[in-house]
Length: 198
Image: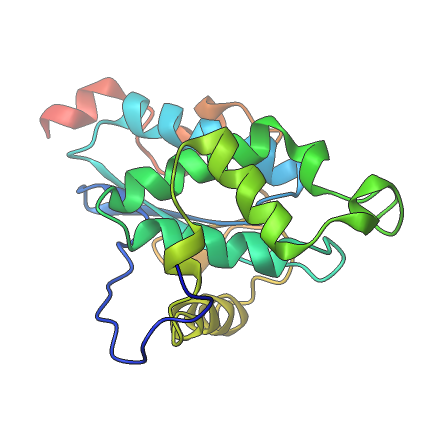
């Protein structure tokens, strides 16, 4: 495989959206943030508890510069979403990175063995852990239009750190990664099972 792809590559980033309900819960996450790691599995627990017909989960990527491989990994997640596996391939990449977070992070954000790591090495590690081929779509020349959109969207909505949560377009600063899923359900007014029938 050549190191570059032709500029006419046709691609589509599958939106990282699950569920189809009228209430919307958006989570701005960073792939090596320990608090995002804590929040990530709870999103799918929340969707299961609420019901896919009552809730829509939207996952947004918010790269953080103090996590030094953040940009590379965010692009790799977007790259995964352009493959045949779409959002589920992207989810597998995120699960793999969170499961081995220390393999992608620096000691005290500045030192440790990852100083000798390269972006190609990071991509190879992601592929080995997730089983998702990200190296080829990572090279799509204009893939950055999606990563830039993610960054602009976060800034426009006042999300600056991770994780940040929004309900129906409003940032909810009182919600955190340490919350039980029940608190998120309550904030969504989806904690009453009887409301499913209404």
